[in-house]
Length: 351
Image (cartoon, rainbow, N blue to C red; front, side, top):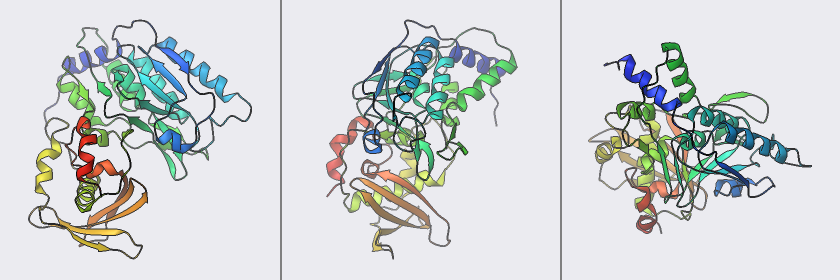
């Protein structure tokens, strides 16, 4: 394995933590009542943060949240799936402040949203990664974006010198931003893949370049980002089969090779083009058998949870090992599908 020389890593971290800051972002209350889970999951927000994020932004948001939570009968903290979503938009700012904000989002179970036509890059994207909700089954991510929004992690190469200890501590803080949270019973949880190492490696390869933008279903899936504004729908056989393929690829946790975002374009072609065998399991869920490559039969079951949401379980037919994940109807499109194409292609996979 080729190791990166220390100086590029130091410059990368220096750039990440010392980007120039302009005027602070605005913090605007849109709704002073806690939102029920169905509105949170649809992308509705109670607070908007718009502009470059810095320390003053974080302080004002924390004060705003504490004022909201102090209201009589407020349900902003320790209220399960009820709570607050924050809509984010902005470019530039301070990444250290953004990491602080991401940690606060995770600790207070605050969801994050990038709305239609909005841009959230650099520090804004780091803060976005802290979006969290307290489900009955445990703490999980609540991060959502519109297919028409722009969400990206980008860097500028800098020359600020840092010691090795400072550099690696900074890298640790970035990778773990918003990753620790407490559930409704007070138990500490590490939120799965809050900020995947693959994204950081991509940025390291392209310091000073265009950055890493969430523009395909694959990239959104890597960061557990849901899409809002895509109508729920019942999938046809083609959509259900692709849903199984998508679940298998995501559940397999294959190591990334080459630039992030192009991994599955070739791998997807390894799925057998033969139409999967349709069936039904003992619980009434639709099941499929399909093949991975020339041989290696895969078992998949698809259970509708509500319109447009499916519980998909995949595993090797020759073993009892199966893994499950919740996917949306739009995941019936290939993982390489661009977000801008999702709306136009939904008719091809729905009944």
